[in-house]
Length: 328
Image (tube, one colour):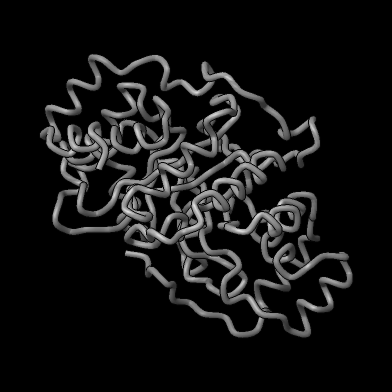
């Protein structure tokens, strides 16, 4: 373990937070770092459209996830770190500027890889999301966890910070209150939640001074739990529904084969375009192999007819109304 890692691991959480707030250096602003900048819309990449809420919150419709970057719930010492860093850079160069990560992924190592990948890109051109894990939901732990994420990412703010996994051990009011503090301090620009069912989402919205702008959930052509009320609630109450794992488990059928021929696209492109064609729905997918980037990025230019979106909603075979992480 490096010396600075030993230091930060030994500092009490609340002491770390307050000392960092007093001394956080300006060089964490990636826009001040030297290095090239290329591949954003206008220089060869796709122009990923933005989706905007009535409250003014805006995010890219399609981005990159980082689950299994650096490992799974623990760090994998044999992981191809360099290859995954390059995959993220290829994605950025293709115009995919939203990167979603979390402190839980590979014990924070996924955030470190993201930080290395984005080091030479202007910070203001990127949209960074991270998430606080269920073991860090009391006030001091939320503040401490956010600072740790910022240090690993090498930035001084997050565009979006999410409550990652539901826990009953800490009152929701305390966790959301701490996330509001992060917004007030300028460390986080927007907050949201993940895997929240409607009643819990309503409680989070009621106790937050900052808008809850995103609910990140398992949603795809196959996994449809959000359609049992959550999707409609988000659309009616100015919340973006961001779909994770949009491709896993999606298999070809007579219907998808016909639509792929009709639109001249691949099945992954069809699956992504189906989500992107819905109001207040965005998505992200992990692209650990750079060869998947061009195919997935091209989905932003694929616009399905409303009738085909509804046809896939009603006639897609093998639908499942429970998620890998059920809504709570």
